[in-house]
Image (cartoon, rainbow, N blue to C red; front, side, top):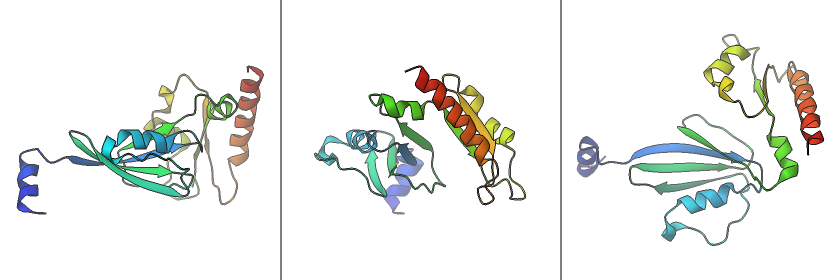
Length: 163
């Protein structure tokens, strides 16, 4: 770190760096949103579907963003926020996005938190406009997965009847 960086940090002028994960179904507009958030001189004219993931960086007046545009595989450890993009014009897939199923996985690990504790830590009780369910699971043994799928299947049936 150079002298100017240190001085800017001491004066509070240095931009804070944040990592943001951008998620959503394919073709929901994740890359387009990220592109629009970048300064106009850094924007891309042709947006192509993301394969794997891409990393974009841009700055605002007070923050320096690193945005991870994920196309499926997610490995996330040091992030400050998540952007979840929903294609509000895709009514058929919207049904899939309405109910939210959480798996509190790795329940076989010794100090794993219960599904109730995970729910409390994530403040899931604040989700009031969508049906949600959390299941304790052990994906290696398949435990808890059927319960979650059964709930999801039932919710999707109900929502599709309402279309």
